[in-house]
Length: 190
Image (cartoon, rainbow, N blue to C red; front, top):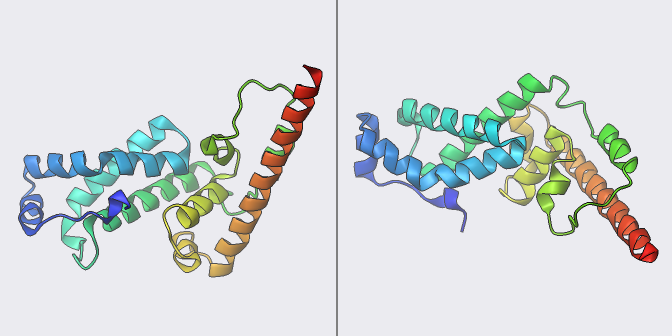
């Protein structure tokens, strides 16, 4: 079960609306790990993930009246985290929608040393994708968003999400194949 499926009861909601510190702390304790993990997966930086986590909670607490209660509180908070993370990515990467990650593949192709077996380290591969592709693959494959919803996050069409997801998967496949070749070559030298 997604930790974002959790909601809050009416009493906690009223306490949040009155800005009671204990209610804010309770919500922070309940959602801090999934909020940080989502921000980290999108941003690939512990410092940025921590900053976005804090900003997201502050935003949620300040805008608690905007939560419709028709969806779980966690899903509403998740949207805030995603929007905050995308805003930061847009500020730092002006060509976020243009970058397809080809330069990253070229950079990795030039590496020849093997220092760590990343075969089970998905994060290692995700950080090699462009911010847009990393975000789209995470939102679609892990968070379960539709292409239409992802397109809306980027102010683009549904086909934007579909094409970027396909490219991201293709690049991940190239990275995995490259690693398999490197491991095979390395094992032959032993």
